[in-house]
Image (cartoon, rainbow, N blue to C red):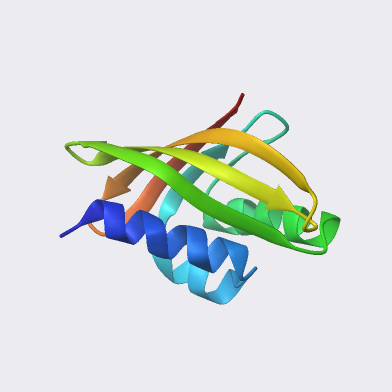
Length: 108
C-alpha cells in the first residue's frame, strides 16, 4: 500500500471540503492536532474539519515533498486559503493500515 498516494488523496479530499469522503479515510480513533485545535475520535475530528471548512471560502492543499518511515508520512505543504493567503505547514500523518490514525500539523 502506498501511503504517500493515500496522503495525496487525503489532501485532495480536504481541499474539496468533502467530509463524507474524509470520514471513509479516517480510523475511528483518529487524533487531530494543529496550532489552533485538537480533537480525538472520528466524530470530533470531523466536527473540527467542518469548522475549518466553514471558516474559509476555499482551501487548496498542495504537497511540496513527502517522506515516509514505516506507517508515518511527513508532508511539507503549501496551503492557499481563499485564493490569496498562503501558509507553509508540515503534517505528520500516521496510518493504521490504510486508515489515517492521526494528523499532527505544524505551521511554519
